[in-house]
Length: 293
Ligand SMILES: Nc1ncnc2c1ncn2[C@@H]1O[C@H](COP(=O)(O)OP(=O)(O)O)[C@@H](O)[C@H]1O
Ligand SMILES: [Mg+2]
Image 1 (cartoon, protein in one colour):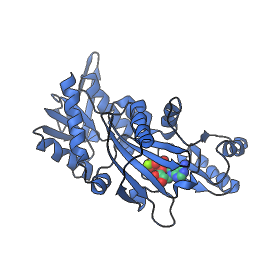
Image 2 (tube, helix red, strand yellow):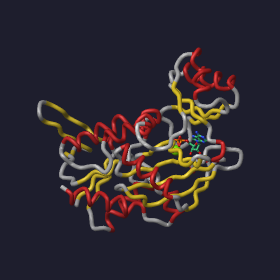
Image 3 (cartoon, helix red, strand yellow):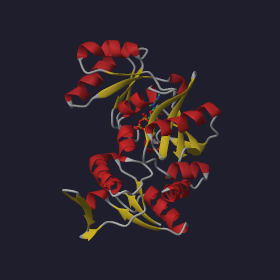
C-alpha cells in the first residue's frame, strides 16, 4: 500500500523509524511536510500540491504533527480525510488531545483516574482554584506545552500568584493541578496502538527535577504495567479516539492518574528502553485500517 507520513522532516528519528518499518513491510511511503503543502479549495473540489506536484493516491495517513504546526498540520490532515483516506489518528482526536484541559475534560466524563485540575482567569478566583486542587504545592501548566516545557510547580500561594500574573500578562491560560507528590519525579509512558498496549516505560526525572520527560533529562526503563494502569492507558486512548497514543500516567497512592495523551509520541526513548519495535506496530495498525475498508 501507499502511505502518507505527515512530518516536518524525514530525518527526525521517529519519522525515519516509521519509514524504515513501512519499507520493511513492503509498502511505499512518502514523507510529506505539511508546511510545504498548498491547499486549494473551491466549490466541491479540494486539491493539494507539494513542490508543484499534486498529492493523491495514498491509501492511509500516519500523521506526526508537532505542536508548532498544529493548525496547518490539521488542515492538511483534513484534506486527506475529505478525500476518504483513513488516518491512524483523526483531526478531531488530535485536536482534542493537544489541549491538556480539553483532554482532561473528555477523560473526566469516563471512569479514568485524573489529577484534580482547575482553570481560573481572574486574580480573585486563584485562591479558590488552588483550594479546589488540594492546596500547595500545586502544578501549573500551559494548556499546550510539550516535552515538559510549560509545566511548573509552585510551593506557596504567593508563588502561584506571581507565576500566574506573569503568564496571564503574556496572554496564556494556565491550569492548576493537584501535585501528585508520591510519584516522586516518576511517571509511566504507555504506547497504545489500535487499542492495544504495545510498550511501556517508567521515566525518572533527573536529580532536583520533578518533570520526568526525557527531553528534560529523565531516564526511561521498561515497565510492566499493573492491570489498572494498562486499563487506564487503553481507556484513555479510546476515549480520545486515538489509534496511536502515548499516555502519560502518574502512580498515585490511589492508583493511576492520567495527565496527558500524546498523539505523536516519540519513538526513540520508548524503543530503546523496551526493545519493542513500536514503528512496526504503527505500520501494522495502518494496514488494518486499509484492510477494514
Ligand atoms: N500533577 C502532577 N504531579 C506530579 N508531577 C507531575 C504532574 N503533572 C505533570 N508532572 C510531571 O511533569 C511531567 C510533564 O507533564 P505533562 O503534563 O506530561 O506535560 P508535557 O506535555 O510537557 O509532557 C510529567 O511527565 C510528570 O513527570
Ligand atoms: Mg507528557
